[in-house]
Image (cartoon, rainbow, N blue to C red; front, side, top):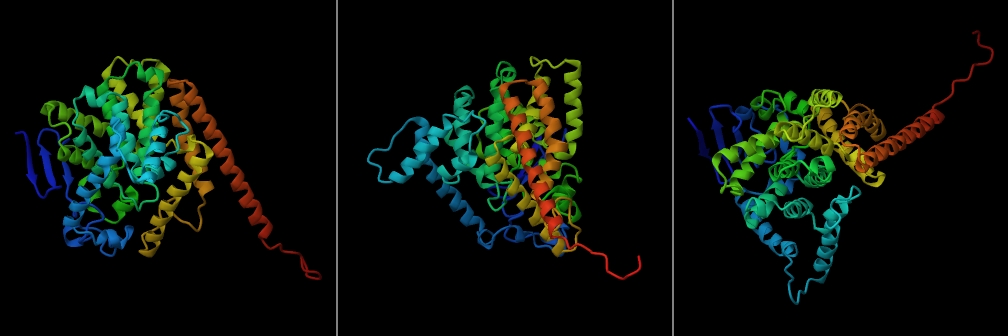
Length: 440
């Protein structure tokens, strides 16, 4: 029995592969998404009975109907057509929109340095009017020769990337399309490293860029423990295991199929692509960090990594995506600090919701007891430093040393802020003086 597919709506389908379930996925516009019009109906979804999950998003988005969203998608696609022309070297004569042309020109200049580690994704997002993920990923597909090699239809590619960008939640302070663009840019930097660039095939590069761009697709802005303790239906669907990562992967598969980007490939190759993209995205589950790191360290200790082996290359791509996903502390202080503030804001927002509904505040999410400095120091010490130390063993290059250098400086900056805070708190604390005449 092959894959049977039941269409539920223009964007919705449930597909099931009876052989291994790797093609099971759900894409239902206005249903699966946490920003659905109806919210989560507990009798159908068995979610926390007191939480309306629409609170994570603005009222304006909640009120957008399915038909309106479809119209918006068509309009946004038309809007991208003009901005995409500079990728093809086509100029628009007598353009009256000088400001837009000027900004497009600056964005194009930035893309010429897309392989630099100090690439400012926040500036690039402003220059592209919030379209950093579409613009950057399309450029990288072209730069790596993927469009020509895989005979991709550029209109389908553009449509796929537009849908990916739209399916990130712009209201999330951290897990949004700008983060996805940043991870994709970092992945490109790693793909340029000598060991990888000399060994990777176009297929490897294709999987890497798609996985990077979609690795947090449709992220709700809360973590897995929150979904589990609120009985969210996604936690039930994925049996409380890599809930978010599974959802990101299945969402990516849904958009790939909807866009028809690889419809000209054989079914076997498309299924292989979907499965391997899943392997890459699932590797970003931070709860599996120790397992992947231990395996990586063992390979390096034995010196048995052979990049001529497709399985070994795939494993290195998993490690590269893991690095790209948490590389913020390895950027310059100006960029790293912004990311730190954004992720902490998202943590604290979850904590506020947990307090409101008496759910028990998750670690790192209590704004009354946690600070950015404390969170970042712990994050760097226990997750980032061990991973990037091993990556430097694998690829001891100027980039690796630069990342470790930024990491050390940024950690020292947060430690300095932490000490200053503790000193101020100590100075402000009332001093208890012994009372005269009172027996000790």
